[in-house]
Amino acid sequence: MQLRKSKLTLALGALLALGLVGAGGYALAAPPAPGMQGPGMASGHDQWGHGAWNHGKHGRGRGMQARFAAMRDMRVLQHLYLAQGHRGAAEAMYHDVLAHTQNPGLRNFAYGQLARLQMMPTDTGAAIATLRKALDENLQQIKPPPAPAS
Image 1 (spheres, rainbow, N blue to C red):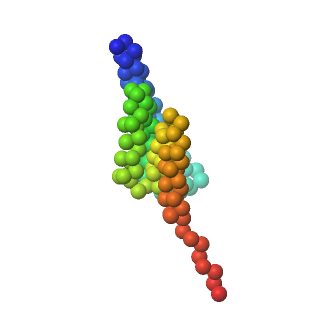
Image 2: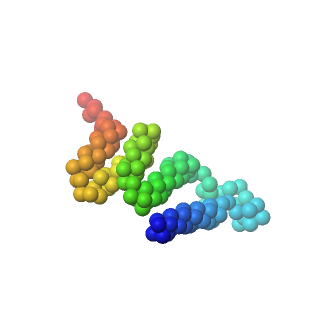
């Protein structure tokens, strides 16, 4: 009973630490207060004329932040499931993610983690099948090269 209680305390401590780290990262990433901006930054641009918070042109922004947040949540949940000895629940979580999203980044992450979970008891056959399915999906998303002009 004491061991179980200490594992629960450890898991809750880890979640609290992740929350504090996330909040600290948000505070560091927050835009400067209006009176704290340097010269030329009042317009939201840095000294080189780049938009300080406009990352849409580079494929980053809210969508990428949400994807990384989901990946972090999946890792934490997987860790907690494994700490409780519920490997099947972790696998079910990744299957659920695969059933609910079409985001290629999240799907690749879920397939990779699922394959790692399936290899845990050295069941490489299931892991290989999962990775082959992920590869097939990735290959389908690659556009074929344009036909040569004749």
